[in-house]
Length: 405
Image (cartoon, rainbow, N blue to C red; front, side, top):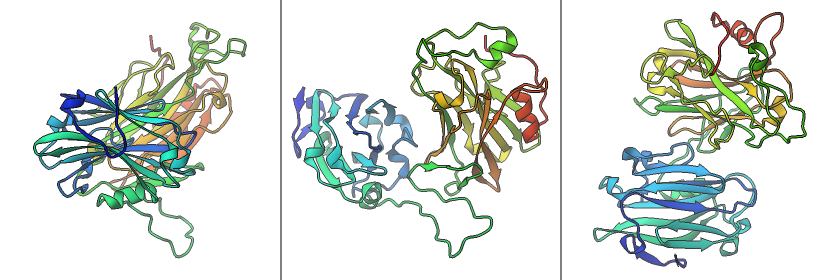
C-alpha cells in the first residue's frame, strides 16, 4: 500500500485500479454526522447533470458507473470510469458535516483505492465544515487520482455552490398561518419531529419521483440474555415458538394502500404479500430480515413514476419477535426519493403496543406528501392490531390469520 500525500497524483492504472474498483472513505467522525458525496463534473468542473451526484439519497448514477454502499464508518463507491459518458471528466469525493462540529475534530481517517491510500485527520484542517478529500479525473486520455484535502468553511452548501449546483430553500413566511404549507426540501435530511408534521416533495420537471425507498432500521443488538424476553405478538396468536434469550429483534415493515381507482391492499412479509414494483400496486417489499442482523434493515420500494396510480399509503411496522416494547428498538424510518432530501421519522415512544403506524404517504395533486403519524395499536376487543389500523384509517380490508413461514 502506497500512502499519498496531499497534492500527490498518479495514474489509476499504476495503482491497480482497472475495471470496477472500490473507492473507500473510512472517516472517524468522532460522533459528528458526516455526509459523504461524490460529484461527477464536466470539463468546466461543474455539476451540469445532478444525476451524477452520488450520496446517501441517490446511491447510483446512470449506467451504475458509480454506486454507493454505506456501512459502519465506511462509504464504498464502486467505480467504473469506462461506464461514464464523455461529458463527465472528473469524480470529486467530499465529506461535509451536518450539524455541530468542524473538520478539526476528525479522527484518523483514510481514503483507499487500489494499492493507494490517502490518510488525513482533523490535524490537517481548521474549522471547516466540508472537505474535498480526493478526485479521480481524466487527462490526456488517461484517468488519474489526486489526493486533495481542501477544506470549505460553508459545508455542503459551499461545495454545491463551488460546483455550480443549487440547493432548494424554503420560502420565507411573512406571518404565521393557521394551516402552514408543508416544508420545502433541501439536501439536508428532514426530520419530522411532531405527530402531524408534514413535508411536500415536488417532482423535477416532467420526470416522476423515480424509485422511492422506504427504509426501516432499528437497534441491531440482541437483548441481553438476562433481560426479560417477550415473544412476538403473532407468535402468541398463532402459537409459534418463543423468543430465545439473546436473539435478535425482528421488526416487520409493511403498508396498507389505496390506489387511485379506490382499490385497497396490503404489502407485508406476513402472508407473503410482497407486492409488485412495475405493476399494480406499484409497491414492493424487498425482503424480510428475520434475524435483525442486516445493517440495512428492511426496504419497501414505491414506483414514484406511477404516483398518479396511487392515492395514499400508511407505512407501518410491528414487533414480530425479540423486544418487549418500542423504546428498546430505537426504530427509524427514512423515506428517500432520488434528488430529494431524505425524510426521517423516529419511533419515539416506549409503549408495549404491538404495531405502529409510522407515516402517511399521499399523492396530493401530483406532489408527494409525507405526514408523521407514529400512532400505536394494541390488539383489543377480539381485534388484531392490523384490523385496528385498517379501521382507524378506513382502508376497508379484511384480515385472516397469516404466517411468514
